[in-house]
Length: 132
Image: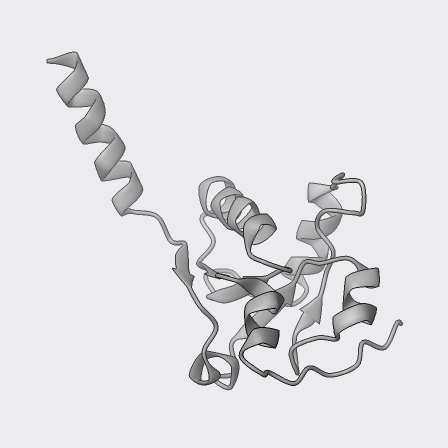
């Protein structure tokens, strides 16, 4: 009985998740949605950015992160209850971060599957990253 209740609670809790996992499409990229690129500055320089994307590093080159600094920058670009998208190189970092933002901050996140690698394979042309 406890096992059935545990499974039921797990299924119910996951059904309320705000994370939407989807591959980037031209419709989404051109929709005006805020896209946060969480890669590193070196990655931005190497491959460029999605036009209009906001570059805010989450994990540095060593895998370290500072939630407070990231959240301060994120909140400057994303309003409360505003849906936004996250992108990284292949989608693994954004998957972790999207789940965290959903669980801890109840944010409406779209995790862009395949990341920039997927977009490049589809022929998407990026814009040059200009350091501030």
